Length: 429
Ligand code: CMC
Image (cartoon, rainbow, N blue to C red; front, side, top):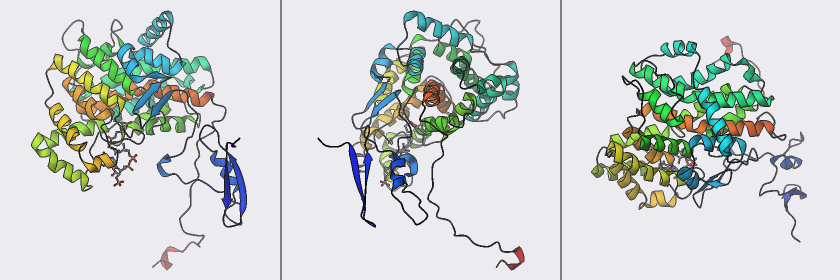
């Protein structure tokens, strides 16, 4: 019977060690029995970018990067995008199971009830410059919510945790839409609790003179599907930020602000914004080959391409391409789609991209849809943040309930100077 363990021989000393293997992993701390110096220090694993380090066990989302599979709590993303709603998916992520009809009704009612924000928040949104990036506004206002709900510090109290989770899912779209209204100099449009989650977001973004905003059902559904597709994605950069900050027992508003800040970067949730700027810069199909050559020379990255985990097509990108057609039936075709499709076609025939397994990711087509819906480019990462909020919160809660988790505190390999004595300033060269 083969043993579920790894035998390690330290070739410097001939000492043998046996390390158990569980769930396809060894515990990094088991390596510490292998001594590396006279001071008794144990062997560490060096892993910049955490490419082969699992900091947790998680039951929330599953990705098979080679096969292009994504599931939330076991349910294929394709089925959720087809049949579920964003709030139902949020419930699934947070509770582990799909809700009964009564539980879903109650959940939607609770979220809808908490969409309003304190009037004081409007005052400090007013203080931002007119051209403030809405992602900066979102990060700051989400963090500020912690000062309005000081009881959020009671992170080990289940009822308090639940309350803050509901508030965060409910208020993030309001903060996001208010950031947009401030940027365009429009009066803030208050939530309309008669509307669905996504319909209400469109209302807060676009209400002008009408007494009651009526969202287009196709666009409302498209937005809901886009939120579903972004809702969770295992231990990505922003989710890791959420868990890292949460591991110090910070309140969930501060953790979510940190996660949103991580999402803002152009290599993560900021990529959708960069894709659109890239497609606009390319401008015409005949300029694609020259652009690809620049990418291959290392001058630029093809934004919306490549993924740390997916080494075949990102399943979310496949669904988004379908949604784009439905949206264009209402809005008219966004001409950038033709450039994107041609860019994808040319890239996927080129050995540079094929050999590196670089395929379109979720961000490649999402921006083209948002633009067709008249959502400004700098709001794209904000929409990603709205969709990802339930995932961040589910991961945060899972971390708090996991007895194995401790404050996140990685090690380092020190490569700086050895001890040296302070030199008075007049004696420095
Ligand atoms: N364009 C051109 N070359 C690329 C790209 C790209 N988009 N992505 C990776 N490469 C190359 C990279 O230069 C490297 O080549 P070489 O081996 O010759 O040095 C190789 O592919 C591996 O790249 P890497 O940077 O080691 O891969 P990573 O896993 O660290 O990075 C990534 C993943 C998503 C940050 C990267 O693919 C990227 O920068 N993509 C563009 C930004 C983007 O679209 N981000 C959205 C990700 S999906 C949404 C989300 O979850 O945030």
